[in-house]
Length: 329
Image (tube, rainbow, N blue to C red; front, side, top):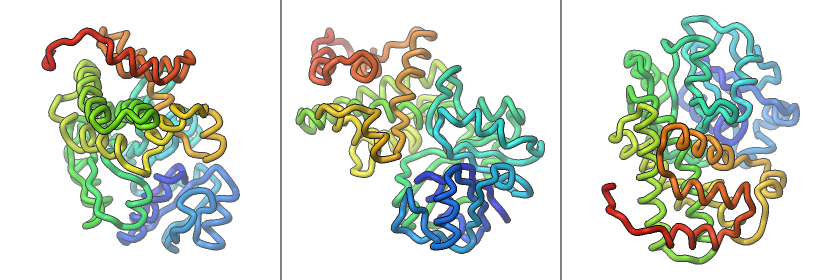
């Protein structure tokens, strides 16, 4: 079996390493010639996870079409802002080819979930989403991880669970692709908020409060989009939220800490080549919240810091100044 992976960032590279270790052949597309050459000649991705060997079963390519031709499953793992254009440039896709989105975010222009972008190309029948608490580095190292493979087609999800999972990467199926994708995207915004609080030294009580109230915001929006509350209490919601808000490898938490210390998002991304999806997701979350009449005060204050120049301390003070209300309201 051959899996095509579009995107050789940290997550795409980690998935390629995992799948090759599980005995599959992988065709990995990278936009950067340096990445293709590095994997081909030294079995290392020079830009991402550079200290971890890439197995020989991973074939790097700089030809986008080559990543999709003749594969049994196609995984798309590019940042959300490039997702639609990259998928379009792949060219024609077989109607029966399963396509898995491994991107956690929304389309920045239309605020669509990634599976909706895929469905515009191939219909809903063969679309799935991979999400959950998954730091790329730990997956690449083969450390125990649990994640979710979601699809409205239960047979497709079960097939992908068998083909893509392993003892180290345990996959659970879920038919609620809306809730799984919404949780995976929105938790990045809350991680930015917890990073701001951590950067200001507000303590662990504040972090726990932001995580808990952030989950309430995530759930409100996910449900109005068509997701199930139970999904947000699972791996793709609460599990991913806790990891991203507390883990030392979290890009979004790290960005929040850096913002609290006076750095800018643009400088951080330029220096690290890492894209923190939460920056893009804030705009979509706020647009969707306004469209559906959903209250998301944490997202609103993160947006004010990112796009309006509001000092982080003032943003968090504004949250504390909100009128107290019922927790179950």
